[in-house]
Amino acid sequence: MADWSPSAAAEHSSRFRWLTKTLLAAAALAIGVTTASVASAADDCKVFQIAELPVRLKYNKLIVDGEINGQKIGIILDTGSTRTLIFRSTAERLGLRRDRSRGVRMFGIGGETYVESALVDEIRIGGATRESVRMLVAGEREFDDMDVLLGEDVLQSFDVEFDLAHAVVRLYQPKHCEGMSLAYWATDGARTVGIEPVDERRPQIRLDVLINGQKLRALLDSGTGISLLDKPMAAALGVTPSTPGVVPFGRGTGLGRKTIEFWIGPFQSVAIGDETIKDTSIVFGDVFKDASYTETGSRVPRRVESVAMLLGADFLHAHRVLVAHSQRKIYFTYVRGPVFQRTVPPASSVENRRENAASGEK
Image (cartoon, rainbow, N blue to C red; front, side, top):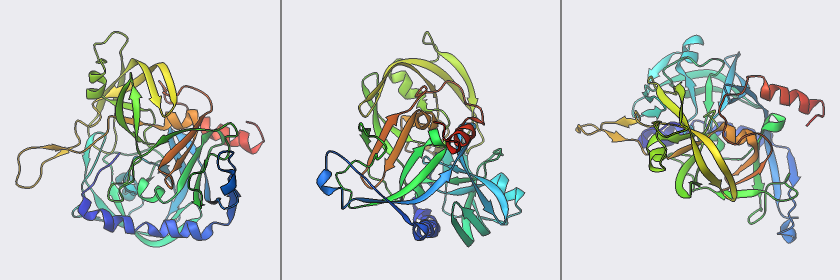
């Protein structure tokens, strides 16, 4: 998860409009969406598949392969990142010249990260290639086999399907599908939950969830391997590190330099749309404690606006999910496994699913 100075947001967002346009130009496949509820509109509704991206898993991150200046890179699909960027360790490895990026501040788990920019001679993502692209550079540590965050600034232009049982993420653009179900795979229907309008200055997928009956705001964050609850919210729900049944979960980091201590604790129920998970355990920690800054001329630190929960990649692994930006709605159907994971799966799990899908196994 990241934040930035609004004064520089529009400028950076325009740098990646090429990716959206290139993917759209490459789109050649249209699939019909059928639904029992709006059958009369079925002939008018068309969903254009823009891309199908094979994904592999590492530390529960969804990674697609790409290239920068002819060298292979790993690209994390990160709906929780407001901006697409290169990690600083990758920029150093590739020998990219970096310049200070004025007017941009970025925060993540672990606090603030210094922001630079670099000119990339050529970048390839999926079927899109572009020359002479200036990208943001951030991140205060090395990320193994992870080089670029592909953020919500790009993904918001599409409806995004996470089909991790078959190790793919698909990008769509629907036409004339208002009021129709876009969960084309769900013959028995899909669960849904609404999302807030996406602000282009700070693009995020925000939704309401209920934990122990209390409504809170969550962020769908595919870049977070395991769903996380903010510690102050956990305390408001009656769960603290000293609560019976709570055990330490270790420490974690993000874009910033600092580490965060985590625990895992019991919760009576979690409701997402009309799906309810009962008697579950969720990891919690003071996720945003270091995401604060002091404005020029002030001595009072301000905390970056945050959410109470990061709904992470474990949710996406347990479901087939379509983020329908076009309808401000998420469709999802349960597939298998725990919704909230207690451990990070091995790096081979999604790769094995891709091999099984290729051989016809499900």
